[in-house]
Length: 116
Image (cartoon, rainbow, N blue to C red):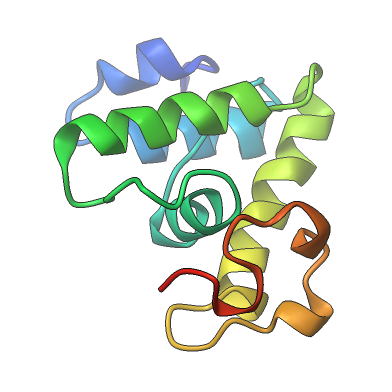
């Protein structure tokens, strides 16, 4: 049987923080963050534009911000995580920011190219 919490999942061989968070969130509706490339991009652009996802300390901060943004319940967390991933994949993409159709635009720290 597969464990339902991220901490136990991380103890399994080959399971890192992202996979553990994704499985706990999506399969078991646990309140767990997950930070992939898309989520990191959205968090950086909207909330913390000075962070560099390639630096270890900044990666840890991105995870902390992602955890702080989580809704209070697991079911809502599932939808929240899925929405952040989709936002980064379809709207706030690596090459083009589609700010005109972004739901985070009113609170975005980098709206309309104020920062690279």
